Image 1 (cartoon, protein in one colour):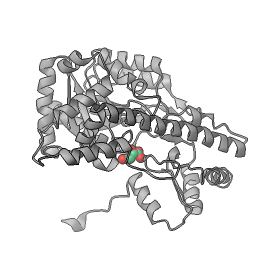
Image 2 (cartoon, helix red, strand yellow; image 1 turned 90 degrees about the horizontal axis):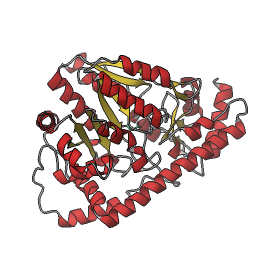
Image 3 (cartoon, rainbow, N blue to C red; image 1 turned 90 degrees about the vertical axis):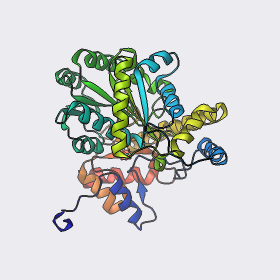
Length: 401
Ligand code: LMR
């Protein structure tokens, strides 16, 4: 059996982490995987999370199974966070949320749910470019994956008209994967007016929006960043949302996510929920407990929630500060192009515009790692390496143009 298998290429993001770890250069810089680093280059456990974990370990009395869809209190807390106050009765009527192992797990459960229940072979539309795993997981779930025009490299901005026009052509019944905010890899999001159009087009055309929300709170704040999800809900559109606490609670390895399905009415929501549970049962049977119960406690306990809000605000303000320093550092060294777009992009990533050859130059000659598409995780820039990285990028623009 196995002799006939051909080797798979390394993952474009997680494979890069392996290469970074193996690099013996003490001055190496990791601008690859989307993991938050503080000014010392560390990814600490958030104090709010540490406190919740300690309380949980002290009070835990069993390791028995949780229900297939996870702890109902976790689901309610997730919905409250994402959809905000004032929508409680609407959520009870139309929304159903299940635990999923991270944002990826939520995307896969949602993809399998649609493929198993509505039929394989339908289209899944993704932005060009997008996080590479979108393509992989939707094709693995039996979708025909198709690109939507999204990013214009000439202007480093959204191809607004082309994107909206393409959404108008998506057939009813297909799935459209939308980044809820802090678009990965470009950092370029539709503005509020464009989101209004997206919601209206989804409502009119009948395709299923699937909002990937992996960076809630990393843009302008939880309330602001949740606006597209809330607008979709308020418009009465049917949609799915993949929620992740990997980044905003720093729970990466605990795999804490959720899939929310919003249906047109209660009967439909209950039917979809029954099918969600069936899908989960054959994928991973039933949920992990530690991560989601930790997240639920942080969201529930008033003191922990206040701590987490401040921790998230601190991560966000570092993202904004480092973006500005990166843009200034490059502008001071490279006079014939503008780097203002770095300031305008949102979230963890900056789409630098570097070519694959320039990225390879940085990695091979300077031990500076970013993904081949030129995406840089800006929080890998630290006070001790910012100048060196800006110097190296300036050199790469001259050397490997
Ligand atoms: C990333 O894009 O770097 C992160 O979302 C991590 C991952 O799973 O790819």
